[in-house]
Amino acid sequence: MRHLRVHLRKSKLFKDYRDEDLYHLLQRLRYRVSTFAEGQTVAFEGAPCSHLGIVLTGEVQVQKISESGNILIVDRLPPGSIFGEVIIFSQQLQYPATITASDHETAIMFIAAGEIVNLCRTDPQFMERFLGLLSDKILMLNRKIEGMSRRTIRQKVAGFLLDEYRKQKRLQLDLDLTRKDMADHLGIPRPSLSRELGNMKDEGLIDFHRSTMKIHCIDALEACLLT
Picture 1 (tube, rainbow, N blue to C red):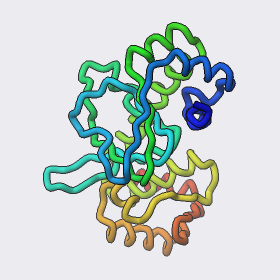
Picture 2 (picture 1 turned 180 degrees about the horizontal axis):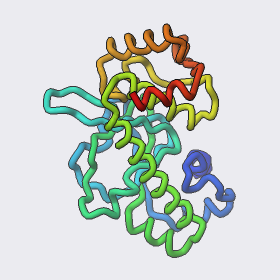
Picture 3 (picture 1 turned 120 degrees about the vertical axis):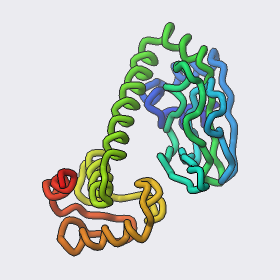
Picture 4 (picture 1 turned 90 degrees about the vertical axis):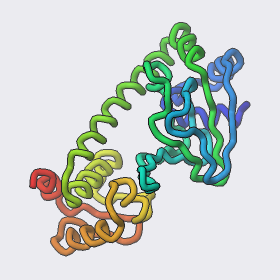
C-alpha cells in the first residue's frame, strides 16, 4: 500500500495528505487498481462510466475516432491525472471519448461515485480538492472550445504554444510530443504543421530544436490569434 500512497500524491486530490492520514483513508475506501498494456483500451467511447479514474503509473490517451477511422488525440494523461470526475455525476454517464493506455505498464485506480460522495461528506479537505478539480476541468474545456474556434493553422499553433507558455511559465518550452502527436492534438495534417512551424521560425516568432521550442515574442504570438 505504501507504493500506492506514493503514486496517489501525484494527483491533485491527495497531494497534501500526510502519509498516516492517507493510509487510514485507503483503509476505509473501496477501490480497485487495474493494469493495462500499451495500446490496450481502458474505456470505449459511449461505454458506461461510474468510476473516477486516477492514473498511477504509465500514461493514457484520450482519443476521438472519426467516421473515416482517423484518430484525434484529445489529451494525454500522465501519472497523477484524473478522468471521469465530471461524467460520474452527470445525466449521461457515458465516456465521451475512448481512453487508451499509451505506456507498456499503465496502472489506474478506480473509485466509484458513491465513494467520492462519502469522502466529500466526511473529509472537508477532499471535498475542497474535488471541487477545485471540477473547476479546473471547466476552465480547461473552455480553453479547448477556444482552440476549436481557431480557424487557421497558425492560430491553432499559436494558441497551443501560448497554452504551454502559461503552464510552463517560461519562453523555452519542453514539449513531450512528437510532431505527429502535436498535429493529432491540433487536428491538422503533419506536413501542414511542419510547414507552419517553419514559416513562424523564418519570421522570427519562434525557434525550435527537436522537442524544445522557444518563443521570441509573446505579443506577436497573441497577435496571431487576432488575424
